[in-house]
Amino acid sequence: MTDDVPRFGFGDNWNKFIRQKHNAERLNAASKRLTSFLNREDMKGLDFLDIGCGSGLHSMAALTLGAGKVHSFDYDPNSVKATQFLREKAGNPPNWKVERGDVLDPAYMESLGKWNFVYSWGVLHHTGAMWDAVRNAQARVADGGLFYIALYSADVDLQPSKEFWLEIKKEYNRVTPFTRWLMMWWYVWRFGISMNVRNVPALVKQIWTHRTKRGMNYFTDVRDWIGGWPMEYAGDQETADFLEDQYGFELINVSVGHACSEFLFRKTGVLGRKTDVKQLVEKLKTEKAYTVV
Ligand SMILES: C[S@@+](CC[C@H](N)C(=O)[O-])C[C@H]1O[C@@H](n2cnc3c(N)ncnc32)[C@H](O)[C@@H]1O
Image (cartoon, rainbow, N blue to C red; front, side, top):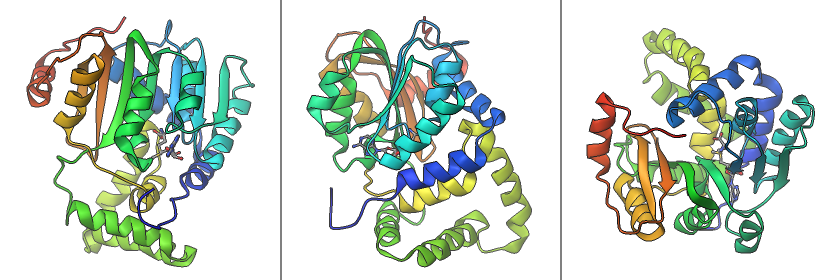
């Protein structure tokens, strides 16, 4: 953990989200994002290790899509509660395990064995030791298996600056709940509508369409963004190089240009590969260059 700043209450935010907002439409949106990034229609034949499961929505989506075994864990007990809530809603399926766990704990990670699909969306940069977390997560991928991660990108031109957001996050976790509430509305005023009430209709539309992206909620994500601490940024090429060069992965799909870059790697065991991320992005605009079977 960096500095003396308390961690953000990710789980509290997820628990509220899942109890107040969960519905079939969100589950469907989460499922669609999984299948579209995987370029598959379902997840049959895949077992799903969800590292930092948060609300549990994507674990539930994987199960609904036919994943064989689902294992969801999170550092934050309230994220575990949120995911358990969804598991109960799903009728407590025996092939879905939910527990507290830490991606930075080598013994715990080792105990999980190998998986043909390891998923960690928006998590590893919030651990306080991002590259250790990436290293521990990738080690759970079986030969030929898939590794789907999303990390805050160092390549996106964040306004006013990347450092500004790190300071905001630290501040958010030091202040009272009332000041946090004010900070959320400050964000909406300054960045949601650019300090111009004429932009309110566009924001309302944005809030409405936000749910269709990964099944998420605008205000839950705003709190997660302004409060999510600890937090680090990863370069897009840096991430690809780290996993390809040292750990024998091949980058097969990527989505960049948003706060979080998404990566789909396959474990080939061949070390030293060097995919040019920008070239792959261009290639993927015209062709689906991979098939995940
Ligand atoms: C931004 S949320 C993402 C949740 C979910 N993966 C999603 O896509 O909606 C980050 C999650 O990572 C969890 N997390 C942070 N550090 C962790 C660690 N060391 N081990 C496991 N989970 C961790 C947080 O508690 C939080 O639930």
